[in-house]
Amino acid sequence: MEKVLIFLVFLSLLSIIEGAPKDALITELPGFNGSFPSKHYSGYVTIDEKTGKNLFYYFVVSERKPSEDPVVLWLNGGPGCSSFDGFIYEHGPFNYQAAKTHGGLPQLHLNPYSWSKVSNILYLDSPSGVGMSYSDTESDYKTGDRRTAIDSHAFLLKWFELYPEFLLNPFYISGESYAGVYVPTLASEVVKGLDAGSKPVLNFKGYMVGNGVTDDAFDGNALVPFAHGMALISDNLFEAVTTACNGNYWNSTNSICSKLLEKVDQEVDGLNVYDILEPCYHSTEARANDHLRLPSSFKKLGETERPLAVRKRMFGRAWPFRAPVREGLVPTWPQILNGVGGNVPCTDDEVATSWLNNKAVKKAIHAKENLDWELCTGNIEYYHDLGSMIPYHRNLTARGYRAIIFSGDHDMCVPFTGSEAWTRSLGYKIVDEWRPWFFNDQVAGYTQGYDNNLTFLTVRGSGHTVPEYKPKEALAFFTRWLAGEKI
Ligand SMILES: *[C@@H]1O[C@H](CO)[C@@H](O)[C@H](O)[C@H]1NC(C)=O
Ligand SMILES: *[C@@H]1O[C@H](CO)[C@@H](O)[C@H](O)[C@H]1NC(C)=O
Ligand SMILES: *[C@@H]1O[C@H](CO)[C@@H](O)[C@H](O)[C@H]1NC(C)=O
Ligand SMILES: *[C@@H]1O[C@H](CO)[C@@H](O)[C@H](O)[C@H]1NC(C)=O
Image (tube, rainbow, N blue to C red; front, side, top):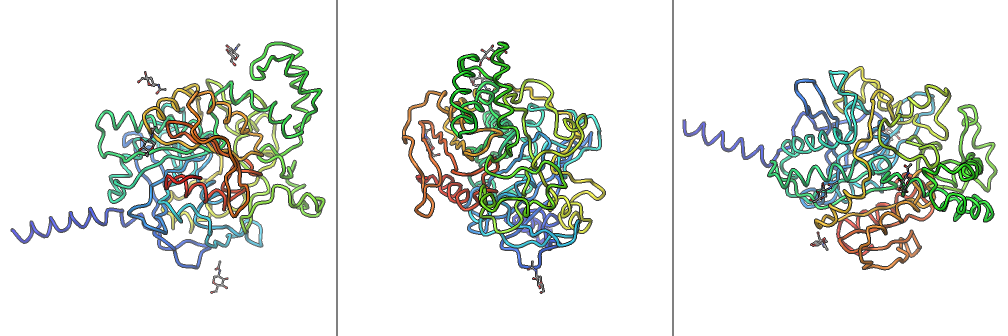
């Protein structure tokens, strides 16, 4: 009897030390024949047993000090886009080399600028219906900001129960684009949970948002000054539109203003909205010949240092110019295109799609069989129902949670002008006045630090997805900021 008891105690101790579920461990990945630099885990967490609502995660343990490095949750936006976007195209552990044959299995190489170099990083497909996440009940696919934040919080509590050895690590929430809404609303749920004594207790420290959707007015007013500052519209047009619209571009009802705004739209229409320096492919046919057709002086514009296959075209959300996310239904990309037909301008998701829809890959990462993975899905009906994010940022930073709002300064989808303006509008004292920050003795961008641990930072020459365009610089500021060092 005693022996059995001792054995049981021993077993439960073991499970505390070796908490991670064994069946979630990834032992091999099709396309990759090197050795894993750290442990990878993936699988589902059921957050509603009744409806069968399941959220998929992929967890990359830190390649440095897993027991001390922060745990960072990463969320891509859309709404409707999978966080494998970040995993495959941005800061994941692998670089993907496209197969020589169309639709073949890509080759995976290690990414020297993976964020797993300095953090334990958790990729979550959210809400259910997105990426590898799913529900057995169709009605779960009708969702919105509030539901998504509550579900992601439920996921976190269950996930940390499965991986208790990471409970004491500092915990951060991060994401980009529409995750500008996911991040602060989830952070707010986490803080509410801490206040209410939810278990387990998360060691939540702060959050990061990149080119994030935040507020109708700030986001909607950002394009015109961006277009002018970047020399995309003339002084004349800028002066006329500023006067006619009186600085309000997002909801003006003045007809002269509207006419001039249409002119602005026409001027910028042919550009790649995600990076004004990058070429835009207006059709799939154009893509096949893109390299031949591009003037050589253009090939370097918008160049990225990611060694392999970076998307020539980028999937994500292109809000109609100056019409940012408004209260109510947010159409997903496939829904927008339904009426129009054709491709999403300037986008490509081939490597991700061929890899993640491979049967052996699905099996290796413990994803549901027969699930049709899409980078951005039209299967959900998503409502923006929590309004402006500014009150969330105000509350979170006032409570001492650290925040960094970063921005690729050549993104026209969520331009830096909006993020710079709303962070400033909080009225916090400037504690680190606007200055360049450096990487390899070069100016990598600019930063301004505010009281309450709020940092605004630009990444020079980067498009919408900063770690994709500037992987070295992104890893540098990520590392410094997490460590609490001066960037
Ligand atoms: C995988 O292994 C083969 C043979 O060992 C080698 O030729 C190939 O380059 C390797 N692929 C990668 C992605 O390392
Ligand atoms: C337009 O936006 C301003 C803030 O930028 C706001 O005060 C005003 O109520 C809005 N008007 C409408 C019609 O939405
Ligand atoms: C911010 O905090 C105040 C005071 O606790 C609270 O009333 C309000 O609901 C909070 N707002 C958000 C968006 O969290
Ligand atoms: C800033 O963050 C540090 C580290 O988390 C914390 O100790 C400090 O209280 C924060 N400062 C403010 C003003 O919130």
